[in-house]
Length: 79
Image (cartoon, rainbow, N blue to C red; front, side):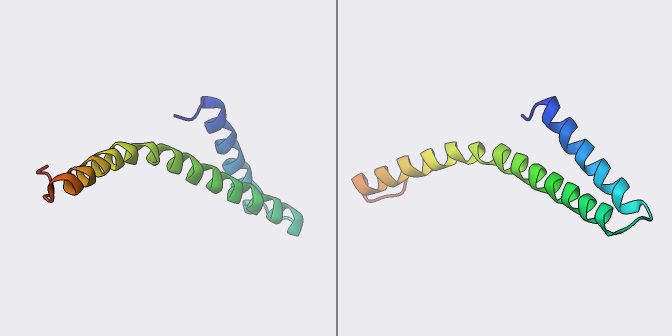
């Protein structure tokens, strides 16, 4: 689980990016806003991948044990 500080930083970056893109100003604030929004999206995707990655580890271990059983007996074990 990401820390509150990480969520706060990502939220501030996203909010700042939206504000900079919404203001009717020159090109530089639009570029900075785009960078802030892009950074926020990369951070959110990273958090999602870190949350989903360890969940597949038990499935891999079960698959490895099933393959060892198949190599030893010639039959795939029942689930």
